[in-house]
Length: 173
Ligand code: CUA
Image 1 (cartoon, rainbow, N blue to C red):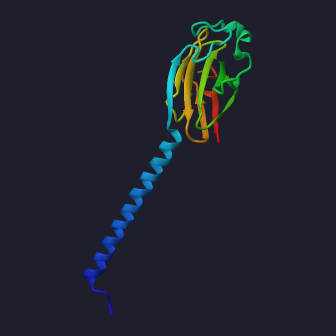
Image 2 (cartoon, rainbow, N blue to C red):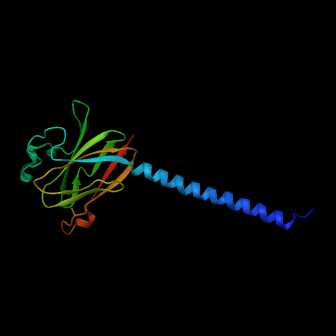
Image 3 (spheres, rainbow, N blue to C red):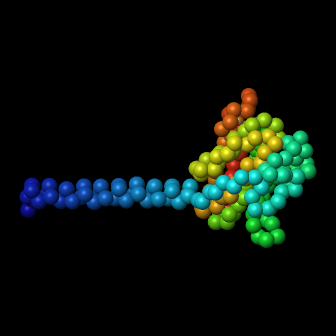
């Protein structure tokens, strides 16, 4: 028997409603996933952070003598008390280390300085965004909640290679 027209329309309307709900749920899920990837707690601390840094006084150092500071061995280190600190050197037109690997879910204090001119240190997908001034140490503490890959971008004009000055923060499980 043919389905009455009215009933058919009613059925279609219900299907549309469910389709609409599915679309809305998908969008909400997508936003939630996106948010969870970029979420984290970032608190900027000026200068040296929790620990004294050799060769750094009140957040200042001699940019010509980074060898006398932990910036001579850039990268992540674990302190004896279990805290994590990372040292990053910016110079035209790269970051050292080019890829900073950090564990997810643990606070990391990142110290950034410049070996030459002013640079930026913006970790894409986060609110980490600091000016890197030669002679100064920019310090911030960040907890990356989710594993993932973040580009680091220099957002301070620093010369011919400025637009190609890129780095990476890789958050590992
Ligand atoms: Cu370094 Cu722009």
